[in-house]
Image 1: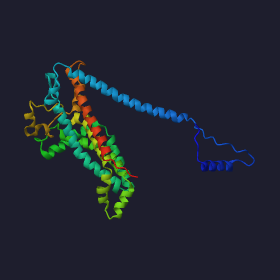
Image 2: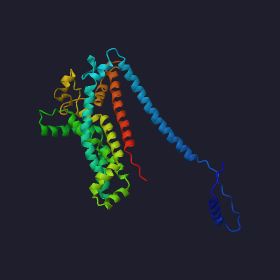
Image 3: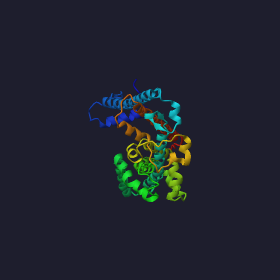
Image 4: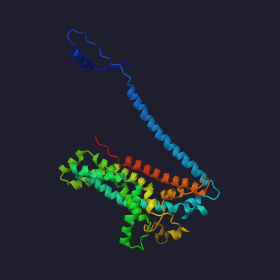
Length: 340
């Protein structure tokens, strides 16, 4: 159906066409019909197909992971109660308590967050509020270099530099060669560019008018950044933190090389909580991702208990990251600020 334009628009368009028509020529009528744009339709279809492929890939991964994990829990020697209640993980002898791997994963992630979150936020505030264009153009490539370093290099850095440094500070009898503290510190350095980049984008999205209003009321640059800019970008900063935590939970090579090559097992919860031994960051422990790498790299038959247990660990890891992503979405919607 042909759309109708206001009279003034038609008159101005007709006048414009008459002015551009050569003298003595008959003016042509305006063609207001909708034209088919084949190139745009092809691009739109291609983008929709890419989105569909990503969704189907995710669904396929979840299906395979859930199916294989279900086969593990159907084994006669495996019970869900033991899986979620015991603190000893040795599938070869029928011990399936997942908590030693979970606590090691959470411990390294917590240490990484204590390093990356405050430092990353301070760097983001500096880049957004204080840095000159020249300083920003120098510091940003340095952070991008950190993001581009392979994780296996970070693993050897933790093993050959961070661990000797910690042992020289706290003593060789206190710090074991393989420990979760050095792995967590290096993971914090690894995810630092991610926190900085996302937090800076959130800070720079705050309207300039809010800063100018604060300056007009006599606030200093620090007061403006802390009381105006950071609260205004809280949703983006919270999302950056949650994404960084997910990245730390899923890190593999650093913990595989520096944290330890075996779970920190205990016979009971009383033994695990005695002196908080299960949370000691100076002892060796094995995370979920590190255990998957170590076990899958060996000679395992496809119908063995050890092989089936890898999918159960992967399912727990997937549920952890999924929960963090849901929390991230909730925080973004809860603290989102909209400006006119």
